[in-house]
Amino acid sequence: MIFTIRKAKKEDMPQVLALINQLAHFENEPDAVIITVDDLEKDGFGEHPAFFCFVAEIDSKIEGIALGYQRYSTWKGKAIHLEDLIVNESARGSGIGSALLDEIVKYGHNLGVKRINWEVLDWNEPAIKFYKQKGAAIKDEWRVVHMDEQSIKNYISKL
Image (cartoon, rainbow, N blue to C red; front, side):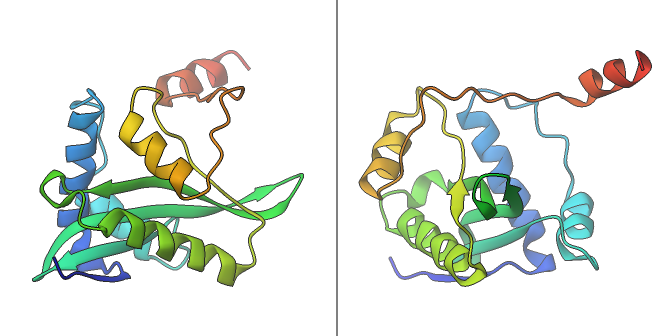
């Protein structure tokens, strides 16, 4: 399977959203995605993009994405967060995931980041194995903490 990796373009966002929805189904949260193509276009391609994205393409069809954003570590300095690395189910095992991760690592290296981080579900054994093979450390002692939109509203209402 021959594919190319490139930076995403605004016109790629419908296919990017389709892969995001595929991931949501895989993670047993098919109704969790509320973002739209318009959101992705506005947030990723404006004057101050909120994210960067690389795509893997075969014959003009996007078969994988790696979407991330810049962060800052108070301990390490510049960092990037890989929000999602998604490969279309039919293209898994083709090397696309490795190539996308390679692109993220090269991108981070060129930015001079001191860390690249992401999360993986504890039941996603193939992904855990893949990341470990690539040299990533799985930090089991850390817990993901987040507030959803309703939690933020509730918090603010109590201030």
